Image 1: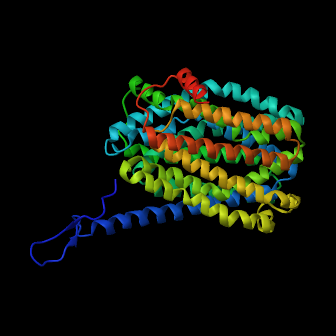
Image 2: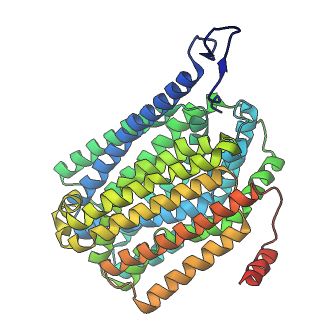
Image 3: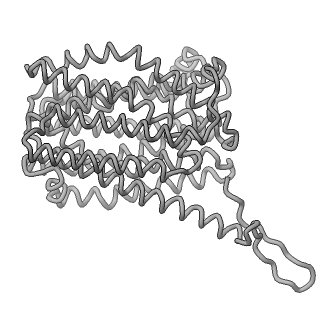
Amino acid sequence: MMPSTGETSESAGNSVGTDAMNPKGVRAPDARWQRIVSLASTFLLGHGTLQGVNVLVALFLVRALSVEHYAQFGLAYGFQMTVALLMDLGYASTIIPLVGERVDDRALVGSYLRAAKYLRDRSFLIFGPFAAVAFLAIVHKHHWSWAIQIALLGSVLLSLYSSGSLSYFSAPLFLYRRLREYYVPQTVSGLARLVAYAVLQMAGGLNACTAAGLSSINVLLNALLIRRGALPLVEWPKRNEPRVNREVLHYILPALPTFIFAAFQSQIALFLINAFGQTVNVAEVAALGRLAQIFMVLMSFNMIVIEPRIARLSRERLLRTYLLLLLLPCALAVTVVPLAFAYPGPFLWVIGPKYRGLGPIIGWVILTGCLNYAANLIWIMNRARRWIFWRGTILEIVAMLSVDVTFVAVVGVRNTREAILFTLASSVSAVCTHSYIGVYGFLRGARNSVENPAEILASLAAEE
C-alpha cells in the first residue's frame, strides 16, 4: 500500500516542518510518485510494444488472408476465445483479490496459484471433448474440407490448454510488479510469429490453418516462458490443498454463472452471423473485431495495474480513486467516438481495402469498444474489492438475456450492421449492471458468507 501523504515532522521552536524521509533519504510523497511513474512507464512501454506487435500481426492477417481464409481463421479464433472464458471460469482472476494485502506471504500466493492451476486443468479435461464436438458442428455448414476442420480444431485445443497456464502464472508477475518478465518474452515471440507469417506468405503457404497453427504454438511458448518467470517468485506447495481449492470456489461461486454466460456473450454476434448470415459476413465481423485491439492496452492496464492497486487501497481512499478512474472511458467517449463517426477512413485503412464498404458502421464499432472498456473497468474494480454477489450475477444475466432476445426478435442478426448493433446493445446492458454492482458494493462491502441465490431472487422480486 502506498504511504499516506502529509507525513511531516515539525521541530520545536521556529524550525520549519519537513517531509518524512524514507531510509534512502527520499521524501515519502516523492518516492510514491516515483513508483507510480516507474510502474506506469514500464507498463506503457512494455504493453505498448506488445500490443503494437499483436496489432501488426492481426492487421497482417486481415490483409494477407483471403476473405474465405480469414472467415475460417476468425471463426476458429472467436470459438477459442469463447471456450477459453468458459474453461477459465475466473479461476486465475481470484489470485490477486484473495491475496489482497498479504502479498509478502509467498507461500500463500503459491497455494492460491496451485489451486487455480488445479481447477483450470480439470476444467480443460471436462470441457475439451465437448468443445471439439461443438466446433465441428459449428463449421459444418460451410462445407470446408475435413483437413481444414481438423487442423483448425487442433490449433484451438492447443491454445485452450496453453492459455490457462499463461493466465494463472501471470498473476505473480503482476503482484510483484515484474512486468519486464511478463512483456519481453511475449513481445519477442510475437515478433517471431510475424516474421514466420511473412515468410509463409512469400512462400505461398499462408492460409487459415498455418495462421491458426502458428498462433497456438505462440501461446504455448508464451505459457512456458511466463511459467519459468513466475515460479521463482512463490513457494510452490508440495501437494494439492483441498481447503484452498474450496476457498477459491467459494469466492468465485456467485460469479460462475456470469462467467459461463459471458463466455458465449463475448462472441455471440459472430456465432449468430455464422448461423444466419453468409461467409463474407463472418469475415467482416471478425475483421471489425480487430479494431477492438485499440482498447486492449487499456483493458490490460485495468487488470495489470488498476486491479492490484484497488485491491490494496484503503476504504477511505477508495471512492475518490474509483470515480477518478471512471473518467478514462468518459474521455474516450467524447474524443475518439466522434472522430470515428466523422472520419471512418483511418479505421478502414487499418483493416484493409477488402472491407472498405463498412465505413457507415465504424463509429458504432468504436462506441461499442468504449462501452466494453467502461464495463471492463467497473468489473475489474468490483472484483478487486471482492464485490461479487449472487444479486449482481442474477441481474446481469437476466438483463443481458432480455436485451439479446429482444434485439434478435425485433431487429434480427442477418447482416454485419445488425451484428454490430446487437453487440452495442449488449454493451449498454453490461455497463448498467456492473454500475449497479459497484454501488451495491460500496453500500455493503465485500461478501463474507455464502449467499443463497433463491433468497436473492425473492428479494429482487419483492423490491419490484
